[in-house]
Length: 264
Image 1 (cartoon, rainbow, N blue to C red):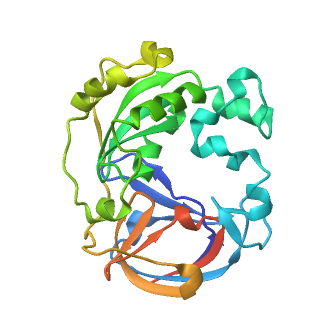
Image 2 (cartoon, one colour):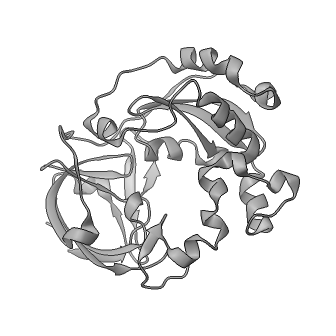
C-alpha cells in the first residue's frame, strides 16, 4: 500500500507508549502499527507549508521567500526573549504575535540526552517534550507571556544546557536525573520578573517511546539527496523514525517535502 503527502511533524498522543501519527492531506498513518514493517520512502517534490508552491524548502518547512516574510518564522520563534507583543510592538504581524506570545508559557527542564532548559506554550505540554525525545521532564516556571519565558531561559542557560544531542538521545545513552533537585538548584537564577511564577510543587512526567531497537551508531537519512530509501522500522523517538540498519529519519527536519511511502 502506498501513501503520498507533504511531511509535517508527526502528531502525538500521550500513552504508554506514546502513539505517533503521520498526517497527510487525505490520509493518516498510525506509525506504531508500522513497527517491524518495511517502509519505502521516496522524495517526490517540495511543497512550502505556507505558499504551497514547489519551491526548495529553506527552513522550518518554508521556502526562502516565505521564511523571511511570515510571522511563523520570525526570530522570536527560536529566540523567545525577542518577543515584543507585550509592548504592543509589531515585528511582522502584531495580531498573530499577540495571539501566540500573549498566552501562558512554560519554562521546563527535560532530559533527553542531558538535562536541558526549554520554553514552550502551556498548550504544547507534553507535546514539546515528546518531540524532543525526553524520557523525563518537569515544569519550573509558568508565565503569562513568551517574553518572560524567554528571558528566564536565557538566564538559566548559563547554568544548564539548552541543546539536545540527537545522537545520544537516539542511542538512549542517557542517565536518569532527579529533575526536582535540578529545579530547586536553578531557582536562584530565575530573573526577578519571573520569580513569582516559580512552580513550587510538582513532579516529573515520564515518557515511554515505542522503540524495539536503539541504534548504536545512528546515520541520518537525507531523502532529498538519496531520492529513496527502504528499511524496517524498529522504533520512533522524538520526531525520528529508527530503522534496523541504524538509519534514522527526522520527520520534522524534512517538513515541506512531499514523499511517497510504501508499506510491506
